[in-house]
Image 1 (tube, rainbow, N blue to C red):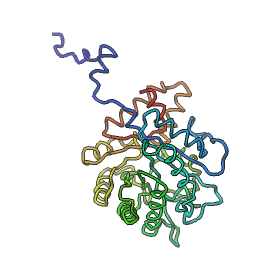
Image 2: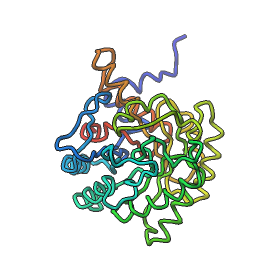
Image 3: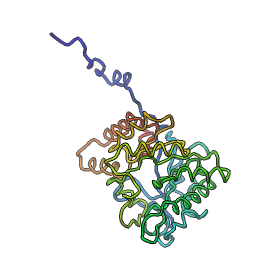
Image 4: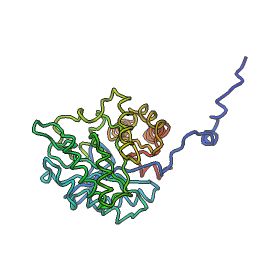
Length: 324
């Protein structure tokens, strides 16, 4: 007996496979994370992330235009201040003339409302200890004191022109405090992309070079334990109750199960962040000739979309959008 059902019939040619594909990447699915560094005259390559740089203000504007022209939907901005300006409170993060706020204004002036300008709302780039919040007398991250700083950050980032703020510090109550701060300062239309499930991951290493991190210790007391899934659903419920407009899972590839569970649970847009370590692994293996770079990039992005992401933050956003 030969098989009567032959699924291979639907795999016989590129045209057939394209016609029956269940999921398709689109440039509009993609968001470009970008770093802008104070006090440099030329873009600075990030050694652990080949092809990614710390931008000057001018090169950031150019990168934003290129992303827009490729069809990318948004750009997520991270500011890298001069080391001398870092302090325990992350003061430069709430200075209207701090590097991140200046960069937001620069990009908005360049792209207007045609590209969604997002800003990382966290203190880790700006503190001399590298943590995502302010510390108490015993050196622990003080949740509630940090919330006060986040409220200030939300206001200055919105004043600078951010369409979306992305609170990434994993402080309890951060979404609600930020929503109140935005609403009370006339920024009701600014959206919140909540980093709902952000895990304490080994894959963040290259990112710390990208932002010039001064981290002392680790973030395990506020970022999630990689062993936990149900905890993400609790975080999700809290973020939605506090007013999150969109939610995110970070990292992407190691947490596709979490992403799928959240995507099937909510009725708001879901994002995933293909983080620096994921990027670095593919680039490094491809440089060694161990994998096919372009296929690996598309395969991983497609897997993230298949798991339920409406939006994907990826350092390949512009390149992939052009190819699509």
